[in-house]
Image (cartoon, rainbow, N blue to C red; front, side, top):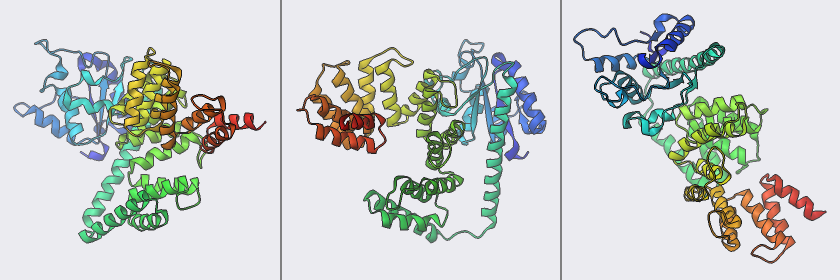
Length: 442
């Protein structure tokens, strides 16, 4: 069987046999019945069923995990939850796909949501980070399946391209190891120059590495054009380099392209494309892409506004160390989005964000002290936290310091210093700071 055109559907009969049949039929019509593998009932007698399932999954390019409302709860004849039993078919199927790094698309049917980490055995916990898709009953079924088919076509096309590249690499003369080491050394030297803010030298080294197709070097070049480091700021050139790096499967380049579509840099704002690129980034292992998806749900950009879905994505990203996601969870607890207001939890998450190097989290701690939320009101402590956040580049902290000088909070009133801080925030695009400057200048 042609692995580049094989889709494995994993499901539980007791949970979702009816809708899985419809999904199978729709995919068979589009891709051909030979491309879809659904049942393991045809396991030959006498064979090791675990090895057989593992071999079948290994022949697929994509695994679809159909998850209904009872997927995590169904028990065997002994009263044990099947998913917690090592010889459970569904568990073996998904474990095999995870082990081989085969793309897994959870299909959420019957209104089910993604299972929580606590509902899964340790070997399946990575499943919660795989971006899923709902498949709803009529009248939405065909629309959801059309979306799924398009996504599968992209995945299969990408797989076929990788397969062709692999064949070319096998038939081509092997690149000398010394050359590979030289390219890596050039890139690492460029990265050190970048971190030392020696941008001209860094750019030269990244350009040299990029000539060999080094995707991380390409991404750095994109960042330098995006931020104007050592070169005139040029979003279009940045985007071009991100696109080249994304072709080389660089997950940060994919995220940055999504960010450009989200904010309209070098392209017209397109939240659907932003979502598409964030999803690609997540599939490639990028944590920030999860936070990006959460932001789209939070503001209802390209999707129905849904604070709970946003929070779910933030929690996934925070569990993997993303500081912005930690900040956003703190903000949700501070303001009561999708959760009850809880200033203690807000402080906890802001502190986690600050510890992860996120300046917005540091600013959040300052806000709690300024407002006396969950802590005793302390303007001096608030100012200290704002100053730390401002040192980390947070525009809202700069605005807040300006506000303290304008109104004499913990400092003497000083309009010149207020305007100085407002200007710093405004230079970073803070709209409230721009309004404050207009107010003080009038």
